[in-house]
Length: 83
Image (cartoon, rainbow, N blue to C red; front, side, top):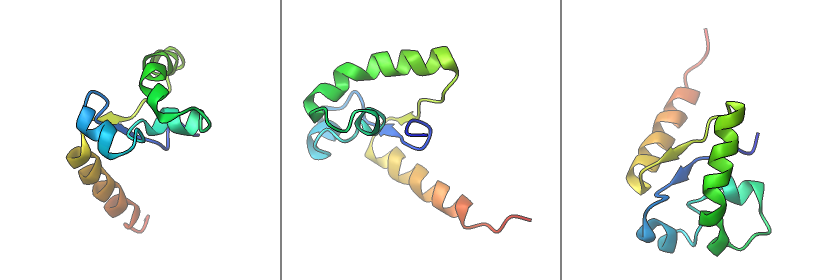
């Protein structure tokens, strides 16, 4: 649940890492909440590999802009009443 409901953004961006306080690694942050943010990038490849092995989606986008666009698209989709 922690993995499929989270989304990383700007994993290769020092800008995103710095301005989010390292919380652009949301998946790893939710899996390991007591680990200092400076260690989250090192955990990311292993988590991604395990997700692939077990068929769990590892949600990641390129940066702030795409993260915000996907957030609003998801919010809009959730506002549509099911038929």
